[in-house]
Length: 487
Image 1 (cartoon, rainbow, N blue to C red):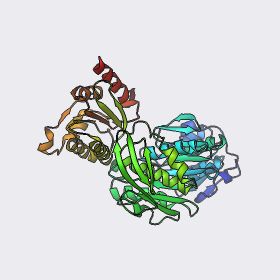
Image 2: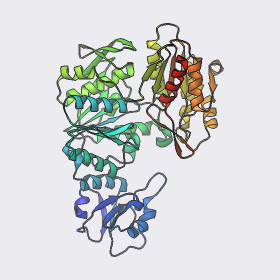
Image 3: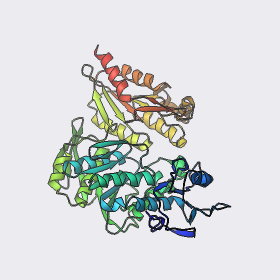
Image 4: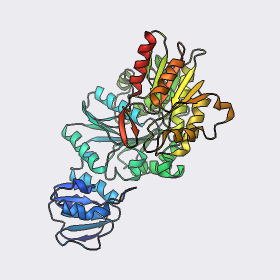
């Protein structure tokens, strides 16, 4: 493809060289540059791509896109100066891979909690309705029934557009994609055409990255601000920022709610381990999923399907049969002792509170709730004491342990969690740094019909310690312990 075509819609400041050259590859990593490719120098949080322009040229780049031109330029190379390399990368990738988002119905899901469940349910729903679908999520990416491992919630713009092209080539008609605040802030989705956007909720998270809650809200809102008038936007009316998110959007606006008047109105009639009995727009339906938070997820999915022209009755029938994403309120019961173990990805104070509130509603009597919880290393430290307080306040016993400590000392992370805990709650927890031992201890403390919540890692099959990912699966530990209980 000609460089001039790759640069379509990119905000150019200066061009030094020939844009009629043929470009056969795009990269933002200089190590991956091939002969005849274009290198985009992006300023990242830790690394500035401008430092690697010479390396990219050494590796065969014939064009360089950058915000600041090098002090000396090679006359055989085309240099393109742009306002923002990250935004340019999105548009260039979109052009290079044939504008794949315009050839499918792409739906973006954003919010603090619920993104994975909503995207996964939409993928399962539309697949059941007979469409070939793509899924881009934290847990996994799927092209039809083919699974592609996920490395980020939202891939970088080149990987993302390449993945979307693969979905187009595989004849997918619908793609459901988690759209994280990091991806929005880093412009990984720049240049994409969305058919619709969904807002789930917003609460305390990622302040290590965004610094302030207002900035976090602004970044989430920017997704809806960028939607076109041909698309739709659907938001949670019960969230404090639900209306704010859609304030400036050009998209057609819709709302879902359990508590107020909305386009897609739900009411919980019964919530138990057997599932949710709800009315949705006056139709009574039993769902296999559990908890108020899943009632909101189901409403978001139902509303999206109706906005996309699907039949109300058919949508509700299929939805009633579906289960959510792995590691989201994923529960098993030991056959003999009837101890209930719930594995959930809850890693924010709000998500943990939602899960514990759901468990409280499921309790039939005097069952204990024992919560195993940790906090990730190299992430927002301010939420650590809040997570600890939520766990102690809403559980009979809590065990503080490791999550993914990453480069931090897990003992220090636990100390941060303990910091500021009221004296009244300090008697309710113990600390066990080894996560496996913590899970084993929680299950051994449980009496028949007690509920053990293992929070924070959900679907993850690893534990990241000092830069190394070691195999670790909460579910495997639970299964091992349940087998011991049965002996």
